[in-house]
View (cartoon, one colour):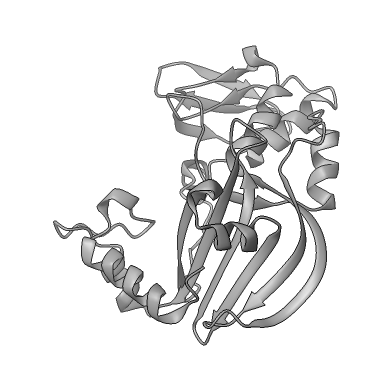
Length: 261
């Protein structure tokens, strides 16, 4: 996402820009909800990615409820809520297809200087030179490692469970509550929020994005990130490898701690 923003802005500033994506197939269906704001809309416009009012679902209020469903706080707050995939599609549509290259894993990177361009080497065997290299390869950045950039991830002290569901699959009461609302519920050490977002391919499809933040110590984090055969995934465990008892515990805790909606 950050790479596409940078690429589009540079492209429209007159640079010759090429994107080299590590993934073998087009990115889609990743991430979940994104809450838009004026700065994001301005950046989309600057990227040449007009959304024609179809970016996401417009809501008009924020509501906090108790476990019993009692209204604890309320405010009018108009906002457009979208999905990661939908936003990515707008950015990709604004960038020249011929300059977007899939299955291009970077295996080494040589920093340039005022006299020599940077050089990027790919697993496919070819190399390129560039006056500017934007390394937008995320938290697990290989480019930072190639350039010996020292960085350390620091655990924030909580984990997040996230889910996406089609709004139409929920009960009538839940649909009425969530269709136009950014919903919060909070207890000591726990916060859960839910809000409607646009589907990735159809602006008229409404999904519900749910995120549950839970405080967890480092021992608990390590246990959660360890799969059923004992392999630890310190940078994030694939959803399908989370042990079943963690999911069962999460489900039972949710019924005890939060309102049924």
